[in-house]
Image 1 (spheres, one colour):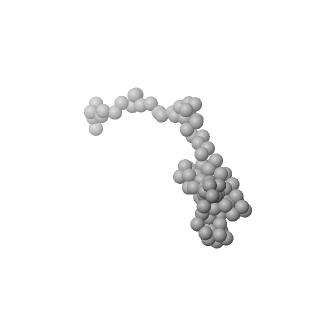
Image 2: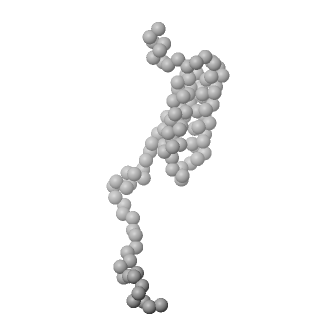
Image 3: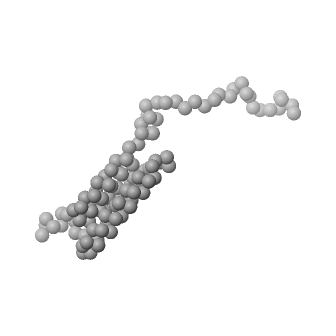
Length: 110
C-alpha cells in the first residue's frame, strides 16, 4: 500500500474529551421522575385510605409521567411498584364505590 494515497492524517487526530459545563450537569440531573414517583405514591395512598377516586387517577397519571421521563439506569422496581400501587388504588376505589366519579368541584355547585 502506498502511504501517500492514504487520506487519513494521524497527526490531526484529537481524542474526544467530554467537557463538564454547568448546563450539561443540569441536564443530567433531571429530578422530574423522582418527584412524580413520590407524588404518585402519595396520591395512591390518599386514594386508598380516603377512597377518593380523583386521587387514584392523579396517582396513575403521575406514575405514567415518572415512567416516561425515567432513564434506563433508574430503578425499575420502584417505578413498577408505583404503577402497581396506583392501579390498585384505582381498582380498589371503584370496587368500594362503583358509581361514576364526580369531580370535587361538581359537589360544591349543587
